[in-house]
Image (cartoon, rainbow, N blue to C red; front, side, top):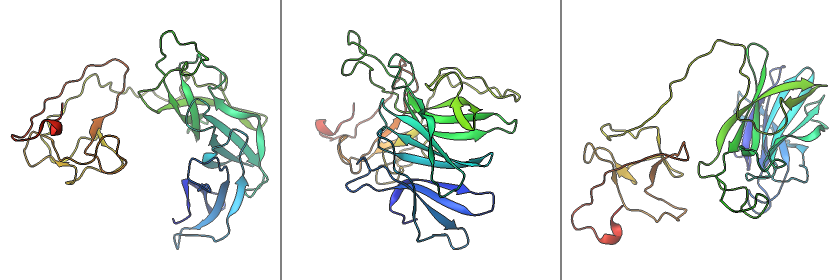
Length: 290
């Protein structure tokens, strides 16, 4: 859109007007604690934004305000943002206003969700929420969270005591209740391992206990991921030698440029994996993959 920001969200108002909400770039880079959430009206006919940019929120002391979404419910506009960064201080903050332009008032608890206050909670780094109302009238919030592996012998509140999260950021869900015109997480503001489901017919999901790829198709399996850019012939080939994934040497694993990295995301802390590789004759030892 050429708006000079990130984490955009499109809001469709009841009167048919549409608005584009996002966080502008900070004065240095996107990680700078620059906390402004702004809004521009969007014209779907021309695909352009109004030149007028309105500031909706300038953040709390948690800083790193981003991931804004706007909702309308029971006569109020609700602004939901992520704050605190993406580590253990991560949080969901909610505001509301009678007018889309504001002014917006903060939730009575300020943070609607966070796990920062519960270092022993199995789900940490909880934040960056998005609300959903089911057709049965029940409310839920999807959010980002992580499951830490804690280091043995390290005190919980010491540096590194909360552990590390090799599974990365995962998606959680929370059940939402409304009290006095404000959304609250049922059972407390922390992320929870189990949540009561909606009053709809259960749809059993197949559990994938194992996975295998023989590279016998011309496209990469969706379970496999590359870093930053899609898989193409600059990274490798699935057709040069059928039944094999051929990778072409590029930058090193710590490079921020083009890497020939194809990987599958971890889903569990304990698992078994195997692979088979073939090295072309004449390759130097330093060029061989293990």
